[in-house]
Every structure is written in structure tokens, then in C-alpha cells.
Amino acid sequence: MRITAPVAVCLLLVPLLPACTPAQMRMPDGFTADAVAYEVSGHSPRRFNEPVRFGPYSALRMREGSTFSWRVPLPAFDVGRTSRPYDYTMVARDQPPVEVQCRTQAWTAGRGGESHRLTVDLTAMAGPLLACGLRMDGQPVQVLEVRREGEGLRGRLQSPWGSDYAVRAVYAYQDTPVRGMTPTGYVIDGDGGTRAVVDVLNRGRVHLDRRLDDDQRVYFAAAAAALLLLDPELGE
Image (cartoon, rainbow, N blue to C red):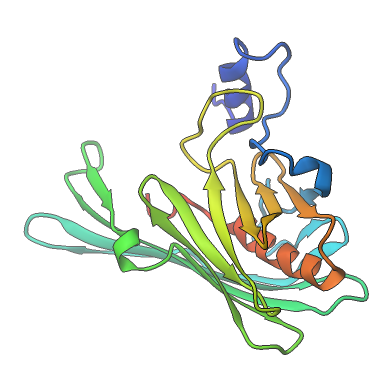
């Protein structure tokens, strides 16, 4: 019997929770009271080129490229690269559109056959796992990057209003000490606090700070969609 990820997490947490509920990422302390949460459609299950939507925000004109991989054999090991592009336009009623173009890439070195293979992730030395350009209503292009750092993912988000924000992956689940092997979500911090949270578990959920103005909210929504589409296991 094949066990899906949400069910597997549910079974794992049975001894820790009084009732088995859908798993959620662990939220930053104190953020929930100042945020509005939106359920996501189009993230999971994912269908090729399907729009991603949450609340009043829609990532339209979605264009996903195919995942491209190659491997070069060397005397003692081989080196490979896996990449995938995607782009879309984030829109909301009466708000300026945000055009987004992204590329994900992973570099690996490995040796041995498929059944006894040792693989080392080289992405951290070769550039970001995720690199996006965001352009809001004709303004200069801003950068969203996510890199592998140690055992986690960290990055940055530039904004058209001049602030820079830190992006970090979260591996913890709400109401349990269990830590995931892959991110349960992402947090965008800056200007003295958390501004957005992206929960990638199950169907997905996006949380935006209530204190953001309308232009800032659609911009963070555009960045959130890029993180929803990121495959952290690319190349593994």
C-alpha cells in the first residue's frame, strides 16, 4: 500500500497529538494574529501550467518548462545538472501586475550504480537553487533567490520600494517537535518583522501581514507563488 505524504505525517504524529489533523508548518511566534491566511488552489495536486490562486491573487499566464537533466561521466564519478524554468503574472483586482520569471537548478556529483549510489549536492557552490526576477508594473526587475546553506535553504527578496527581505525555509510542524526532511514552508522577514509565510503542506496556505499596503501584498503574493512552485528536492 502506498502512503501519501499527509497520511504518513498523520500516522507519525498519532502518539503526539490528541486527534490527527492535517499537518501545518510551524508559524513564527506572534505572527498569526497580525496576518490573513489564504487557502491555495493549483499547488497540490499540481497540474502542468495550471494557475496558482489564493484569496484575491492569481498567478496567470503560467508557463512551466520541462525539467532538463544531463550527466557527464568522469573517471571516478559523474557530474550532473537538473534545471526547470517557470514564469507567470500575478494579478489582483485594481492592483498592478507583477511579472515573474524563475529558474531552478541543482548540481550533483555521484558515483556508483542506481542501487548503491552516493550523491553529493553541489548546488551551494554553483549558484542559487531558485533564481527569480520580479517586475511590478514596469518598474526595475527585483531579485528573489533561495540557496542551500548547510542543511537548510535561505535567500533574499528585493522589493521595488527599496527594502530587502530575508527568506528562510522552515522544517518544523505545528504542535509537534517533529522536523521534516524537506521544507514545510517558508518565511519572509524584514522591516522589523515577518511579512509573509508560505505553508507548502497539503494544498498549501499563504499568510500575509495585515499591515502591508495593497501594492506590497500583491508583490509578496507573487513571491509566495514562486516558493510554492519550488521543488527543494530538484536533482536528488
